[in-house]
Image (cartoon, rainbow over all chains, first blue to last red; front, side):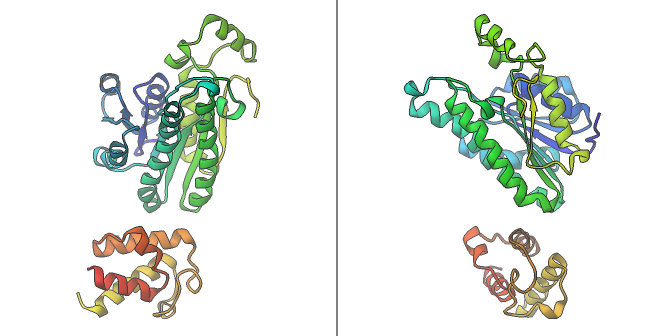
Length: 245
Length: 79
C-alpha cells in the first residue's frame, strides 16, 4: 500500500486488539515498530510474530515517570522516532451522575494527558528531522457522544482540538498531526457490549456491521505515509457511515 | 573556549538557521523582530545552541533569549 521503509514508529496500546493491528500494518509497510503497552506478554508475542524491526517497550501511561522515559527508550531501541501513534486508551464507563473523580481523571490522564505529553516529547527530534507524523486515535464517540462515556468522549474530543492546534504549530516543519476516529470496531472493548446493545448499534451503521481493526490500521498507515504530507489537522472517520462528518 | 570563539559559533548557527547575512547579526539584533524568525525558529535556535555547545538551556532561560547578545551572554556563563 504505502512504503514506510526506514521510518520508526511508536505505537502505544499495542497490547490491545486495535493497537496490535496498527503495529502490524505499519510493520507490513516497512516501518520499524516500537510496541508499547501495559501488558508485556502480548507485546512479546506480537514482536515475535513480526520478527525483525519490532521492539517491545512496556509502559504504563498512567505513570508519569514511565511516560517521560518512553520516547527516549523508543529512540534508543529504534535509532529514531518518525511516527507516533497515540492509540492507548482506557474506559471507565459510568453515568455522569455516578461518575467518581477518579473515573473522570484516569480517563482524561491516559486518553488525553498522555497524548499531549508523548507528542511534546517527540517534537524535538521530528523538528530536527523536518519530518514527522503524529496520528492520534480518537473515536466517533468524541464527535457524537455516548451515554455513560462522558469522560471518554471528552478525552477523545479533546484530542481533536489538541491535534488541530499542534498541527498548526508544526506544519512548517514537515510534521503532520491528525486523528483517526474509529466507529464501533470488533475488539475486546466492544466485546463487552450486550447482544441487545450490539443489535441497536448495527441499526445505526449503514455498512451493516462492526468495523475490523485492520480497517482502522489502514487509515493510520495512510496518515503516516509520505503521500499524506498535505493532510494535517484533520480527522479521518472510519465508522461504516454511522456518523458522516 | 574564548568569548570571541563563542560569539563566532553562535553567529554561525544563527546565520545557518535563519538564513540571514552575517552583518545583520549584531549584539542587539532580535531574532524575531530583526532577523525574521518565527516563534518556532527561536525554539529551534535554542536547540541548535544546546547541541553546538553541549549544554542544556532550561525553558525559562530560553524564553529570555531574544537577541543575539542574549544568546551569547547566556552561553558564555553556561559553558
